[in-house]
Amino acid sequence: MRDVLGRKGNGTGVSKRERLPKFIVWSAAILVSAVFFLILSNIVWHGIGQISWEFITSAPENAGRAGGIGPILVSTGLILGVSVAVALPIGLGTAILLSEFTRRDSIFGRMVRRSLDILAGVPSIVFGLFGFVFFSNLLGLGFSILSGGLTLACMVLPILIRSTEEGFRSAPGEYRMSAEALGLSKTTTIFRILLPAAAPGLAVGLILGIGRAMAKTAALLYTSGYVDRMPTSLLDSGRALSTHIFDLSMNVAGGNDKAYASALVLVSVLVVINIISFYIANNWLRRRIMTI
Image 1 (cartoon, rainbow, N blue to C red):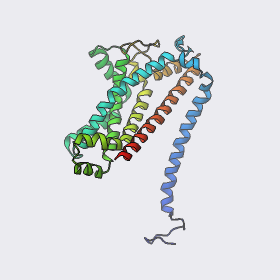
Image 2: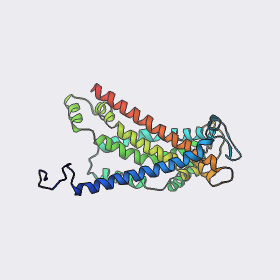
Image 3: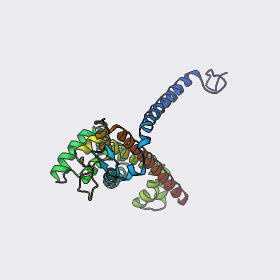
Image 4: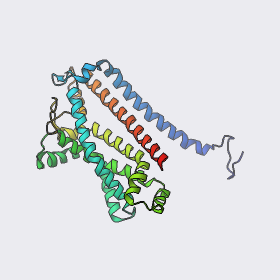
């Protein structure tokens, strides 16, 4: 059989030349999924036996080799809270500037985008050294949750800005033209029409940024510190969950099972954040579409 272009087919609408790329794509997807489930099953197998309410809420003992991770979870939550609170308004504002007030081919826009792409690939140890010099020493914040959160915000911003910008640019041009025809201001158009359309891109950037921030040990070693007690303020030192896992894994005697359990908690938190973020973004988009 031949299709409308005169090519030979197999009766199913898919030629042999088209089957090979499809096979490669599916094979790559299956391979990535298999590696993920292999790692996840290994963590679950070794760590599930250590998970309990006492482990989640109690304080660590003997440098983390006994007890739980209660204060460590609090420190991790505070660090992420500072990071998101700082990165979200700056990232959203920069994305709006690049997508709505800057031409794609302008020199300024190209320079900013190129800088963001370079920053997205900078190793976490470099951000850690920068945070240690600038936030901890120059600003006098020392080893603190605030210093660690500000450093992680610098790491989150490149991914957040680029994904949010693409979300704004993917909004149909008819939205802008319709808003202009109705006489809506630029501010109203951005926050009432374009921002809901860009919400999935914002959610993706935020999730990727949070996932990157939660897993970066090197940046937090130099900024938030190593203390595993319960923090009383943002200026206290606090051990993040990734730092705690690193410490336990480097001390196998008595700490390896706790490291697996802490890693399982970290993965579970990331999964919950992913589900909640996509749920909020999709609901927000659905409601906005219904009101337009």
